[in-house]
Image 1 (cartoon, rainbow, N blue to C red):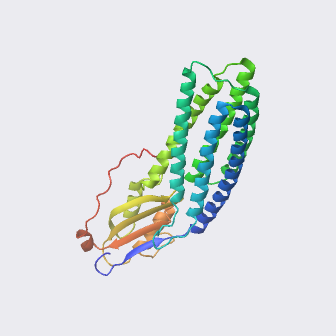
Image 2: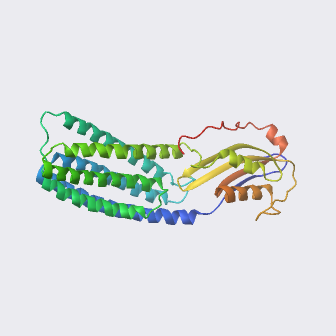
Image 3: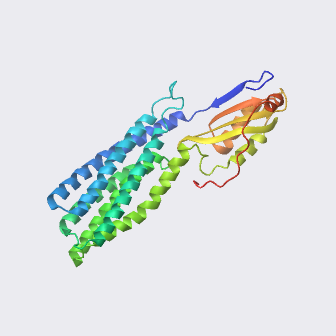
Length: 330
C-alpha cells in the first residue's frame, strides 16, 4: 500500500460468464467422447479375446489409457466450473491444466511402451502370428469410433489444454486403428508378419513430438509463465506510458489457466494529482488508464495494480525487472 493516503487498487474484470459457458460446452464434448471411446474399448476387448491377437491386445492397452485420460479430462472440466472459495480464491480452473499434464504423461508412457514392444517384436526369433481379417474388422470399428470422438472434440476450445490433451489421446488411438488396418491389409496381401510393428513405430514418431509439446505447454502454465506470444517488456512499456506514471516495478504476467491471463504491478506516480488520459478512461485516474491499457492492448482483463508515491517506492523492497530471455514455450 502506498504512503501518503494512496490505496492499493485491484481490478478483476469480467469474462467469467463466457469462460464458464465455454468450460461447460467442453465438458459435454469430453463426456460424449468418453462414452464413445468406452464403447470402442469394449469392442477391442471382444476382438482381442476372440482372435487372441497381440496387436489388438496392445491397441487395447492404448484404449484403456484413452478412457482413463478422457475420464480425467471430464472430471477436470467439471472441477474447473466450480466458483472461487475462501480457500481457493482463483477457483479450480487449473484442474484442467493438471488433467492435461496427467494425460500427456500417460500418453508419453504408452508411446514409450509401444516403441519398446515394437523393438522387441522386431528382434524376436519367431514373428508373431496375426489374423489379418479379424484385425481389419476390429481396426475399422475402432477407427470409426475414434473419428466420431475427434469430430466431437474438434468443436471445443482448441486453446484449452484439457481438450487438447484428450484429443491427442483419441488421435493416437485413431492412428493405432489405422495402423491395425494397414497391418491387416499387408498381412492379407503379402503375409509379412512385421507390418503392424512397423506401423506402430510410425505412430510413435508422429505422437512423440505432439506429446512433448503438450507437456511443455502445461508445465509453462503450472510454472506461471507469461501468456504465449505476449512480450512482458511491452506490457511494462505500456504501463510506463500512462500519464503520471514514473516507474513500474514488481510486474508479473502469468496464466491462471489456459483461458485466464492475469497481471499485477506496482505503479509509482509523480504526486497525488489525478492526471487525464486519452481513450475511454479519459479524465480518469492513473489506475483507470493503466487498467484500460492492459485490457485494450493485451487482453488482460484480470489485473491487480498498486499505486504508490515516490516516497513509498524508495522504502519498498521490490524485484528487479526480469532478464529478457526468449521463452522456450512459445
